[in-house]
Amino acid sequence: METLRHELAHLALHQAVTVRLPLWFDEGYATWASGQWDVFDRLSINLAVARGEIPTLRELDAALRGSRVTADAAYALAASAALELARRNPTGTLDPLLAQLERGTGFDEALLATTGMDAERFEDAWRRSVRTRFGLFTWLAATGFWFTVSGLVVLGYLLRRRRDRPRRVALDAGWEVTDWEAGGEGSPGGAQASTRQDSRPELLSAEEGNAVDRKAPER
Image 1 (cartoon, rainbow, N blue to C red):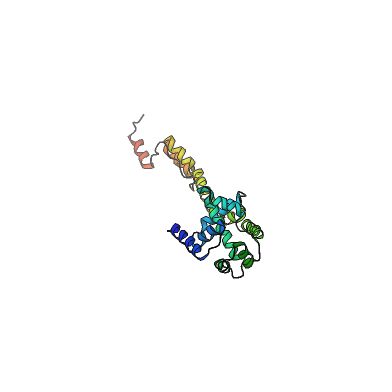
Image 2: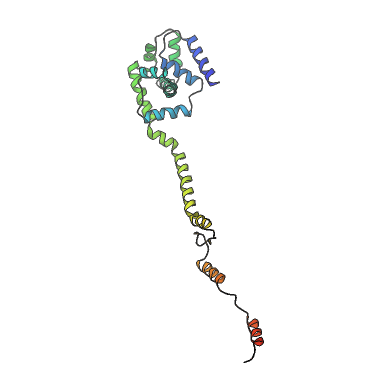
């Protein structure tokens, strides 16, 4: 469905505009207009910036014609360039630029008329904007919460394994460990007393002792 919307955005643009368009703008506009500009596109740009791969607009055109792996990040970068055009206009939209193009104004002339920048200056401004908005620290800030949660889960797992280690060793040896020996809340004195009670013979009560004495033969 997204692919269909993307192609329909291309069709609508080409029907309204007859002048030659740069490939980066053609694909960037279609990506944005079709609703494909989402968190995954932002992540692709973040990773590209982290690797130091911010192309020129000419290089971006070549990347859009490349392999699927290269093109995925290129489409996201192209969409960011189209959005930068909107940001550079006082209206915050692409409407003035599209209106110029529909009247048959060349792309570079329409760019200058709606943003006050020529193609070279816009390229520099766009690349600076990408570095600022999608840099490594921005990416870390956006994903830092999940790194923190993952770290706490791993830490809890390691602490649990360390606490249960004596019990696992005891089970492997075939005897049961008390809570105190396993690091629980049991009493050391209670554990020692239990051990002594298991190892000594049963004591007789006072009445049972007297009965034994009466049965003993006299000497």
